[in-house]
Length: 276
Image (cartoon, rainbow, N blue to C red; front, side, top):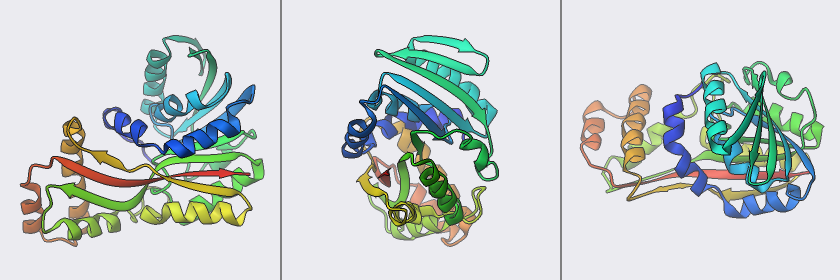
């Protein structure tokens, strides 16, 4: 699976962070926040956004393994995390960060999650986490990850999994057809085989429930409005490009849909917390 552009991840980060389910974040903090040490694996880490949002919920001594296939994103993670912490010590392929009284050791690991999943779980982490990942994965991939997490008896916490909801402001007559085509596009192969797309939250919940975990879900939809113009402006053409690829909506209808100046959007996401 190839990585995303760092500039896109930077653009979406503020919306990602404010949209995460506060209820699930608080549950995670109650479960793990008092542990003196905690080890974490972050799958598909990108530029480290998930660490920046999750680390404040955990204890004072944290050991993170950040996994991504794209070396450019791993390099960007080093830069972004060092700037975020203010205090950063570089040791070979590790970072040692000090932020808000917490000491965070970060190991950077390049791996293809689609083919090298065994490399991700070489040690037994306390927490396995990810952001905006599992809707890109196949049903088999979700099952395999769940099995590894359960084998480790780790906590599982993933955020911002796309769930298929989509609304735009102002409305357009083609919105429903465009959304249906986009959802179909999301089930295409993104590097793991046919993607789970909007079914990913349900598949995650079912996999961990079947393993006897306690599963909770929370809403983390993007609710974009005034102040989010740059993100909305990036979403619109990307959304249309995906619809064009699936060839379910006629080009004149897509072109007409694109003529509207969008002032708001809702993009549905689900957070999932599974406790052993």
